[in-house]
Length: 275
Length: 254
Image (cartoon, rainbow over all chains, first blue to last red):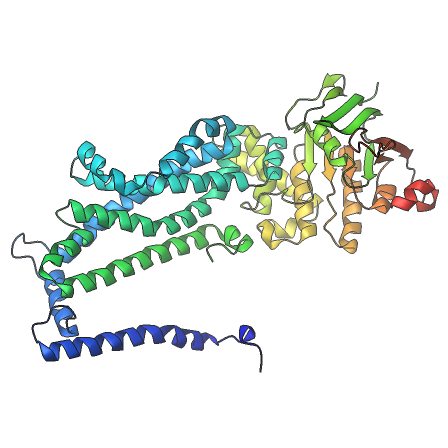
């Protein structure tokens, strides 16, 4: 008998073992739901699966009676647009400032302390300021996401640039590169996959800020819907929405990983990071 | 007049003297191998030549002109590791120097210019024996092949001086012998002036035309940092000598 740390499940075994907790959770839910519904058929806390299907069918495929929109898709689109803009803008700023900071000592001396200071502000604490300054529209929500994740991304980018071996920078100079060329050909391509990795890590926080902003002031969006129907105890909407958000988060993360592996094979070969 | 003159070169870090009173003259085409114990200022000396460190006192002149204080195209370098760009293929790694030179803003070449650059790069890649690996990334190459690539990359700029910082330190003995042949042939073909640091005293002995031994010849036990290292032996190598000809004090170290 081998020691426990040396025993590995087979590939199929891994999948089965990984599925068991999910199945257990499902069975647990079904049991609890059945028990509660048997006691009170109007119970809203743990709806039956048929209720989920009915509700989601209504939200996904029937135009809303009030606005004529397909609520579910409208919510999804609104949220993804905010998330995409917020994360995209953050990544762009992080790339510019982070690479600049990392590569040019004078710029770093200027900006690095401020970035550190900003990164310590709890973004939710300044949400009211954002609403006051930018109004209750889209801008405030996007800015919240940007303020929430940009400092982290900048600091990560700066660190990654500083981690590029000095030998490479010296080599590039002996090959005739000036500062701009060095940033363009040596630093920038090398931090791109690291930016993707950092964005993947920051997505959880981005979702948090998105849903928080939508909960407070919005007229559509996944977070808005969840907090709206909370008043009616509509677990038949909340639970599928949470699952949907989880699925979206997974898909985005997976897509970023695939893009990174496809575009930057050398990066994934030399590090175990992001594999 | 000699090609490179080193005049009374000192390097100190705080009150730690690393190098002191270095006076040397180097002729064009010299192949100098540098040996010495760890912490003896070999790498510091190379950094002074490279321009990443500034001398505390004294100066280095190339053809009468002081060295520029940052790395530039005059001096090529191959380090023990991290010398090649991991995100470029072999061809791109060698071609990038020409792209730096010809395209100041994009640092990329297109069309006819690219073809010319590609041709020159391939020639150099063939010279170091990597033509079969032109589209591979460095992580797909063995250690020896990576160092070949680093040499090709440095030599395409036709540098006047080539600095090698333990370039074969991480290689197997068999591959190391191949690399010695390669370096010697490149040295002859491109008429380079080479400074090469090595830990392998045998390598130092048969590869170059001149062997420098860095050592601290004065040591104050009360203040270990008070005296710096100097070139204690400067031996011409003509290929006939062997390890036995070395002064006995050196053999003890080696």
